[in-house]
Amino acid sequence: MAAAAESKPAFRMPKLHNNPTGWGPSAGPEQFDDTLYQPFSKADRLGRVADWTNTLYPQDNKRAYRQYQQYGAQGSTAFTYYHGEDESSFSLVDNSRQQPRSKYGSKRPATNIRRPGFGPGRGGALGLQNSMRAGTQNNQWNNQRGGRGGYYGQGRRAGGYGRGDGRLNRGNAWSVEVQPEWKLLEEIDFGKLNNLQMTVQDPEELGLYGNVGVFDRAFDTLTTKSDKALVSTSRFFNRVTAIDDPVLREHAKNGGQVFATDNVIAAIMSCTRSVYSFDIVVEKIGDKLFLYQRDNSDLDFLTVDETSPDPPHDDGDGSINAPRKLAVEATLVNQYFTQQVLKKNSIVSIGKSNPFLDTVPEKAEAAAVGYRYRRWNIGTDLNLVCRCEVDGLLVSKKPEELTEDTDAFVMVKALTEYDSKASGSLDWRQKLDIQRGALLATALKNNLFKVCRWAAAASLSGASQIRVGFVSRASPRDNTRHTVLGTSSLRPKELAQQINFQLSNGWAVLRTVIDACRKQTDGKYLLLKDPSKRSIVLYSIPQGTFEEASDDEEEEDDDTVNEFASDIAPSQADEAEQ
Image 1 (cartoon, rainbow, N blue to C red):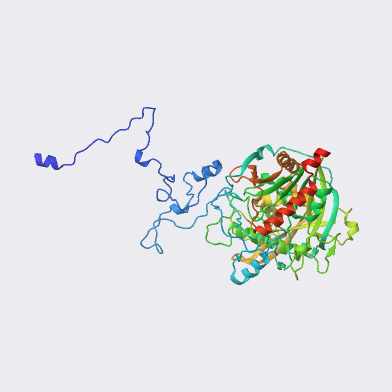
Image 2 (image 1 turned 45 degrees about the vertical axis):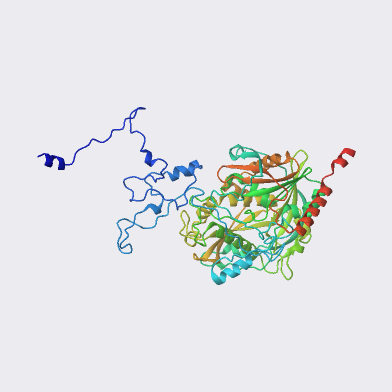
């Protein structure tokens, strides 16, 4: 009997945990402390404890963190259990791929891939066309390394995409890595900018430059059944920054305090609508302030679906629908479209010759772009001189008639469709002819920051209309061939109303940023949009930041800057004599 009793298993009472702090379960076992886990409900599929390979939401983003902690939503397909013996024919659970909806910035790691090649040398030509032509052969964007100051060359700061490891940031990545030696001076919260208002009088015309063509109204009659193939162009697109613009430099000697291009000013005016990070370089010389985009800047690229509820993401597999490649594609499409919609043999001069012809390579033709230099009074003894761009004329005009005719100019832009089955989008080929208004509203909502910049730039340039083209891929898997399905005509004020953008608020935001920069001492600064917060920060940076050049180039550039500074800013000795 004793032996039988010893063979029976003994029943031992489990240890009862006492919670001295109140009712409810006590703290978890110590061996499970600091163990990552994925919350799930009983309805979820079986999965593993944690996944360290997926790119999830950063925990410092409260809104995204709520999405990360969603309960019973099966937020990640990586946790799905699959039967390992015969997965191709049988599985224990539904293993179909699910595409979770996400907030801004979900699964968008920064990319370190170099941008497409942009020109053979310093101040080189736009290399995007070469990338597109190369892409037609291998169905991929060609990643070449361009020379210094390529893409939109001229000078050391000529908005180029040549030397350097330019990254088109996405999600919660910074547009530029903040260095330890940079000094944070000020942070401007977007919440304080939304209710600001400022009225600015009509600008003063300073001059017209360049050549433009007449808009071909045949594009207004396009339908999805009578579409046109998008035609590439070999014309050279020039983007000289404000600090290297000879016309702006001349005006800096004769008056004015703030100098910039419409691309930069529109980005500042619309910054409260941005999701991705971007940056603007600021140089203060005496009482002069120059704002311009640096080399490898994102501002010269057109983002795609930046403000969409389910924006594109980069899985690192080289997909043509990665955000970086979509931005390059959209930029190319926009450039090609602006030239294709002009009537043949209608290119005329609107005033003085193009001030940037010396940067156009030999045997190359400059793109048809008009430049309007305008001056606004934005405060007591504070004038803004801005170079604005126009893409064409509604009707043919003589140069002397354009100065007074504010209804002559048109801005041309293109919206791109890369996948008709993308989440939250409408099929353009099915809906454009019958639901153009709804389709346009959806496209505007998904590209709010980009469209706000368009509306602000159109108002700055004095364009009477914005012609928006709907351009779709000929095949969703080919990003080198596109089709123009139709166009829409909008006035800048109408477009601003549709997206709830107030130009008076844009002027107030701009003035706030300018005031923050003007109170600093002479030097170089960086305006940087914080990707994790709704704010823009101002850093003080060393003078040579973002400048990569040989010793000879640096000496030449320094001499040019010093000479320019001495021309527009009197020395302390001169001020003392005065």
